[in-house]
Length: 356
Length: 232
Image (cartoon, rainbow over all chains, first blue to last red; front, side):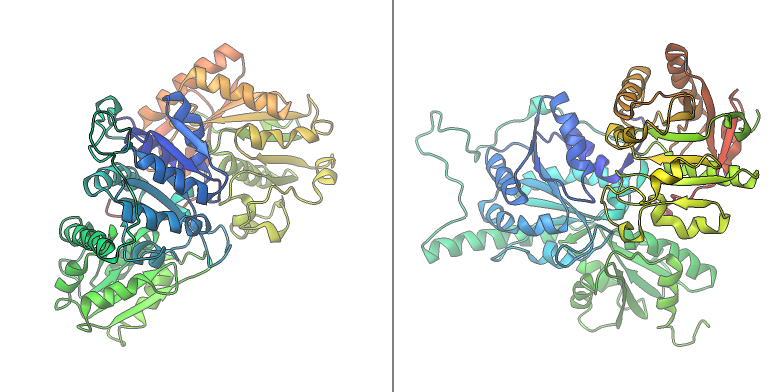
């Protein structure tokens, strides 16, 4: 591969999924992720794979569910209201233990909201937007190159744990353009059908049944315990986090996606004024890097969480700290993205005159 | 090495910018409007983009107002909305013979097709149609793809591309080799279709990138500039 090209975020997600070996895409148009299905609609026939515009997001996620049961790599994308429609399917997929990858290019909410960038779907993504005790792995890149690299990683994780992996980016990361490089192309001819996949009985004695249902409470409890065991393992092994300029930091900003990126500029501005601040950026927002945050509690005076919402990830930061340090918040809603200077100004309000 | 002089295109009253999504139409049309206005020409910039949902001219109007040229854009209500709406006074303005009209048209055949309805006003001989090319974008990375893209845009808009514009770049990772490679590809297209390359674009802070290329260069002030990047 190698050569860099200039791509829009939503296009880059699609090409990354194709390079990762996605054999089928199911989705439905919604701004600001339209470039993803549009790109798939052109490229999937070129590579002899499946693109299908479903009649709704409800249909799309159930097509994903069905296709994922065959053990093939499947991908869907949507934006906030469309992802809400898909939540029933998320829950069914979780308890059926089938792998798939879904991208949510988040826009302003709640309700129909607007088409501007937002991060208001953090709770939905990390706490289980559908019913029952379940999780999906949730990945939050902050550049387009990272987006591309993590789509590939997402498929690997999905298959390793037979779980749905959700990529959350806000509309800005979906619409902006940056140079990207596709470092790896998965050879789909080497795909093997996993032993759990429902691809016909063949010469097996028993049929394979994939279901999210067990009407006997004891049976359903067993399914739940299996899920919980899987989630604990993921929490132990799959946390991804970036610590930026934390070595000598006296304060820590916590942020993900676009706000983490803006915070990096804020940190440069603050440091030019002699304020030693660093960033803890969760790359997986579930599993959440609680230990990383806890480990910095004794080093910094306070945490400052900033998000494009009313304060969602801050709850996980507070849980990680368990009261050890104060956690302040600055957020914007409705699709408004603050500048690095605005974030700095809000941050400085908590310094108590030490750096005026 | 000489700077692009807009006077060289002023025999025509319409300056239309078309091309693939993400080729740089908005950025170039804004810069041309500034340049023509500053050179004393009565210039109006038209936001005709019905395709992209973010960073259209109407979304960054505040940044452009200080330059003083007139902007014709869809009503304020359509800011931050992806409705395919044209400005309400667009026909009257397009018919105004006393102004130079720069049109930022939406990307791809879908965007270009929307201006076909004005072809009785924007008649052949009255316009320059600039097809902007970034050879580091998907679907315009080689001669065959570019020619296909030009034909599709011509068919959709029912207008003829009169000039090519070279806008090969990789944002902060642009090198003179990358620009040169784009030039070689676009020159092939130019020879094959017999359409001249009007100019090449370069970030005004990095003019050295185009030093070795024998084309008029157009230094761009970047308005459609998203987030900075640190530590990656």
